[in-house]
Image 1: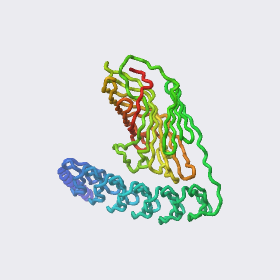
Image 2: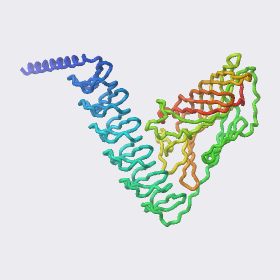
Image 3: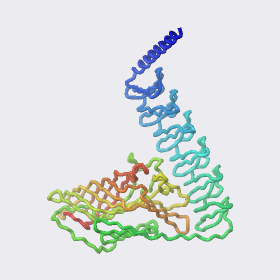
Length: 522
């Protein structure tokens, strides 16, 4: 009797299972395709649109989306509609409407970060927007508050989404003993946890407090202040800034030895190459370039060819880079690399070329050669470039006022260009257009920060590879008439090595003054 009961029970379960599966199959047959993504939950496609149903046929996500991602461990689906992302719950409730550029997973605090038009905000798991999408960056929450960046200024929000410290500071450091150091309009002070300025931001720099007082720099003078920012009547010796030493770099191209010398903290750069000398000197906001006498002149090798290319000469241009989507507006996580494009320059000295004629009239040919390129990226924010403990590119936010902050590189370039020349008069002066590839090897790189918080501005120079590519390649276009030319270069090699820094692709445009110095072809 007992065995018969078990048999009947098993038979009943089997029949129920078959009937249930038959109902599921019948429901799924109404859709063009289906995928099981969890027990009793299916992703389905109808008329090229995707949705989600359960095994009872109940619609969880209607078939009106371009994509539906898998269920996460909290029961949420991300959905994509016309390029915008939203979130559904497995109960069928829409949590975040599909109108955001990106939506991240819900964190341990029950909030999900969202991005709209490049600005960040947060939603909670009930579908309430707790922080509006108006911030360029939102850092992680600590002790119920998080730093936020809005319109280039930093403030704080609390764990209910309200600003507790307005976004009016260039930087806010971590709170210690209920106070945090701040930087406002290039001046340093302190605030308390309620956002009150307990030490007014009027000092160029404040050292650590000890026994209720700290050294500070006020209008170029060193003073003592108390914890309320009041100046104390205590004498103090003025700091003396050491002069930066001279540095020298030797490179060799072929059999020639070239020397690059920088002195006075990098204010003046001498480039001795092929017996000549180019001097680049910075005085304040101005840059002066001087070419010394040429004491070595290579005899031109005549090959009886009429084609002469356009590469040797001097180039002056502007540097920039773009994100993988081709935009100069960098994503928030790369905003520390934002630059002032009007102050990011490039200078090149193209000292050698080889012209190869491809037809008898001399109007078409190949051009190659060698050139030294000095590039500079002027950062627009108070971010000091560095490597983190893992060796990846990171940054520090400066506690001091900065007047100049740049990343500089030196590359030895070699192009291969196809040039077309259109003669314009009997003297054979030609309008020309050339295009092709260019490769380069990095010779040197450094950052230089100029602080303006003292009577004599201090310049700090740090030499490093900064994970920059040792080799790079790209495309070059040139056009012009006689000595005045325009050029543009775009590099398909990212600025930094793969997975060690932001994915950025450099380019430059500018003016070239061409002259045939050493043309080894004809």
